[in-house]
Image (cartoon, helix red, strand yellow):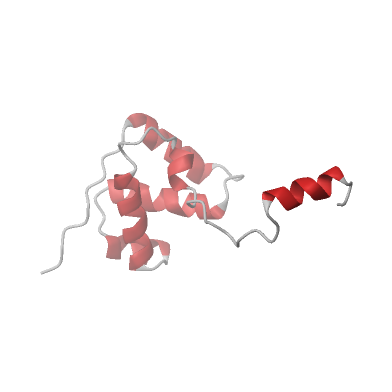
Length: 108
C-alpha cells in the first residue's frame, strides 16, 4: 500500500509569494518549477499527479514536497526555501596564508 504524501498547508503570505514567483517572467525557471510543485502539493495533489502535470520525475516532486515541509519551521523566506542548498565545491588550491602572501607581493 503506497504511503500518503506529506500534507502542505500554505499561509496566505506563502501562497501569494509562490504565485508571484510563478507568474513573474524574471523568476528563474528552476525556482518557478519548484514553486509550482509546492502550489500543486498544497492543492492536495499527490506526487505522481504533480509529476505528470509538470512533466517532471516523481522523485523531484517528492523531494521538493519534503524539503518544503522540512523548512516550514525555519524562519526563511519563500525564495530561500526554493533555492539550492550550498555545495562544498572543490578544495582550495592555496592555503589562506599562501593567498595573503601572494597579495602582499602583488601577485594576482
